[in-house]
Structures are given as C-alpha cells and as structure tokens.
Image (cartoon, rainbow, N blue to C red; front, top):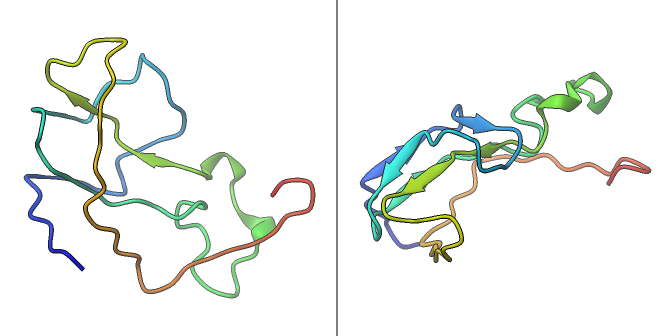
Length: 102
C-alpha cells in the first residue's frame, strides 16, 4: 500500500446523514490538497459483536458519510476531480441481507 501524507484528517465522528447544497462544510481546502477520511461501516458502528442483532439497531443511523469538504474557488456547477490514493479497511466488518431492504 502507498503511504499517504495528508495535510488534513476528518474523523469518522464528523458524519452527515444526507447530501445537499445547504450543508455546512466541516473542512475547507485548497485545490490539490490531500484529505484523509475516516469512514464508518453502513451501521455507523452499532454492531460490534455477534451478540448485536440487526433488529436492535437504530435505522436512522445507517449509511453515514464523513464530511462535507469545500474546495476553495469551486462554484456551483463546477466539476471537481477527486483521486482516491489509498484505502485501508479496519480489522473487522459486518454484512447482512435483509429481505425487502437489501
């Protein structure tokens, strides 16, 4: 894996639950700067062991995203290019299939 020397880091605690133009950025960067995003699993950490059941999670706390980040000089309608330099999964993960849900 390639080592990434990021000038900025966003914690997995800096979450949003929807996307939209009215969200306040948690970080503003210059074009070309590097950001490390810590992300959550789809359940936002609610399942931590085999004893945690899907029936016991808060469904309003699923599919969080880290951010948002603003790029100085970008205007509405501009196209931005983001390059993913590295992906590092944590030691464990969770997956499930829910009939009628996904």
